[in-house]
Image 1 (cartoon, one colour):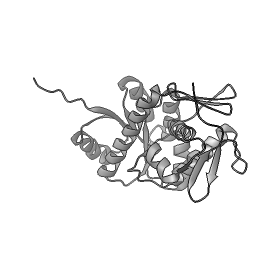
Image 2 (cartoon, rainbow, N blue to C red):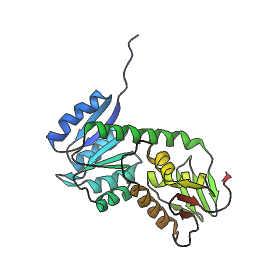
Image 3 (cartoon, one colour):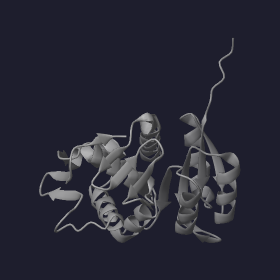
Image 4 (spheres, helix red, strand yellow):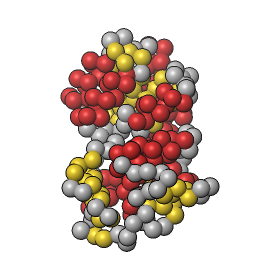
Length: 239
């Protein structure tokens, strides 16, 4: 009996033919099914209709800013997003990550690197899906429900991006123990992460802000200088 190959759908949002034509071929060679969107409007329409497993999102689009597309996609779903852009400043990367992007690639890029990043992000998404059956964690008024992927503090729901949630869940699951920066990068991003560890700092700052935490006198996330972070509080309790 003939085996049917199932290709994973990648929504590729890019309006420059010199980029999308060769890279679409590279995606096909590596077993993916690229779906091309050349504008912000088309990207949002196809994201809804085609149900992609990951979005490669250019930031400079003919009818709008890709950051607005990222914001809207994140409002609708937790589909993994990798931003592709010529903007290489650290401040641009910080904004992209805070909007909910899972990764950020600066042009010009090699097909090999981006495909490696796609696989890394998809691996993390698959791992997060498997963890959904694990019990909730309760610590000092905070409830991290990994099955529902929700967070409540003193009964109030807190909205987190995918990566913020994964980072919080990892820290809370190891409450009272120091988790090194390297281990957090490997567990939350991937062992093959190409980027700077500043990405971790961006997400920790965002978490602290959303939890109302003070870095100088932390209720939850304590910095262990030169090593990593420790989630303060009592022992983990399963729901």
